[in-house]
Length: 189
Image 1: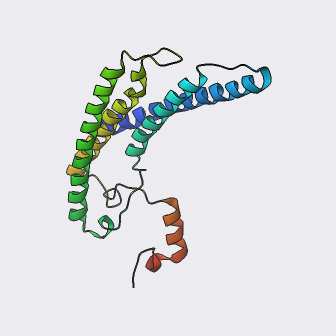
Image 2: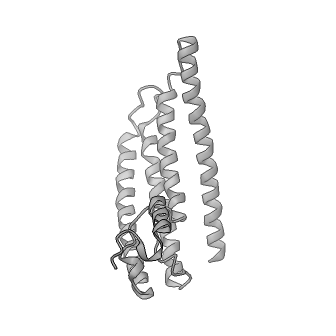
Image 3: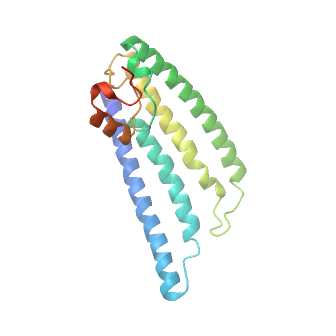
C-alpha cells in the first residue's frame, strides 16, 4: 500500500508540473497577445482559444491534486461531532456517493468527447473534444484518489483528522483562533 501512496504522490507532483507548464504557456500567450495588440496593432489569433483550453485543463488537473490533499472546502459541523465509527461510516458513504457522481461525470464526458470529435474549433481547427477530455481525466484521477482513500479507511490507516476529509475555509480557521476554542462560530454555550 505504501508503494501505491508513493506512486499517487509522484503522479500528483507530475500533474503539478504539467499545470505549471500550462500556466506559463497561458501567461506567454495572453501577455504576448496584449503586447502585440498595443505595441504593433496585431495579435496571435489562437491566443484566446488556446489559453481558454489551458485554463480548463489547469482547473480540472488542479481538482485532482486538491482531491488528493483533501483541500476541497466543506462543512464539518456534523462529522466533527461524531464518534470515530460514525466518522468512518459517514466518510465511506460520502466516498461511495462521490464515486457514483464521478461515474456519471465520466459517462457524460465520454459522450461529449464523441460528439465533439468532428467539431472543429473556430480558430485552431482542432477538435472541440479537447475541452471535454480534462473532465474525463479528472473523473478517472479523482476516482483513483477516492479508491485509495477507501482502501486506507477499510484498513484502518486513517487518523481521526483524516476522517474529516474536508478543509475549513481560511477565514473560519482565523476566526476560530481569534474567538478561542469555546467560542467557535456557530457554537452555543
